[in-house]
Amino acid sequence: MSLPDLSLQIIYARLAWALVAASMLLSVLPALLPKLFPALAQRTKLIVAATVTLVMVLPGEASPAYWLTLVFQYPSGLLTGYSLVALFARWNEKPVDFLLHPAFAVFLSLLGAVLYLDAFGVVALGLYYRGFDAAAAALLACAAAAAGVAAIWLRFGAGGAALLTGVLLFSLLRLPSGNLWDALLDPLLWAWALASAIIAGRRLYLNYQADSAARQGGLQKARPELAQTRASGIE
Image (tube, one colour):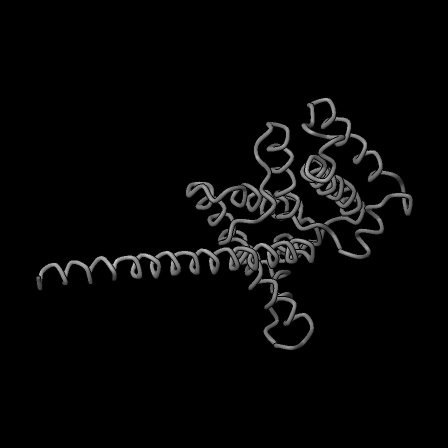
């Protein structure tokens, strides 16, 4: 498996972190500072995106992307794809969705748990190293691309477009590291997926409780009416 050139990785890290930071800022600014940013104008969005990009492309240690890469590694192609989709949505003033689709969240949470346990030696599957294998990576990339197309066709939110972006970055440029798993997952994306899965599970549990309470209330209401009907029949 061919590895990307180091200079290309550095350029990717700068631009990818700029996309991630800009998409996050444009999503949270109206929510965190509603008085200052009640509704972001197109000019304000452009200024925020341009400022973040200029800061991220500063040389060497002057760039926040340098330190972010040391802590969180390179942003995965999938996270970069989600950031692109989010920026496009913010530019077109679409509603902000801070959570991943439950299907993607659960899948990425389980995948990340298995990969990290494998990397730490808790389980010995060798999955991460197969991401460098030419044949295995090609098959997995084709499967991921097919899943992305299916997600777009099924309208699973932004997941399909983001997944295709990650697969294309890996297939064409071997970014971010030459390993397929690094193109599909990174620590930040895994944490986001895990939080989204937990919140989705909690919502499902609360809805189940609400439905159970509603059904129980309906039964309790129906019992006096049934008793009254039986009493009328006896009379």
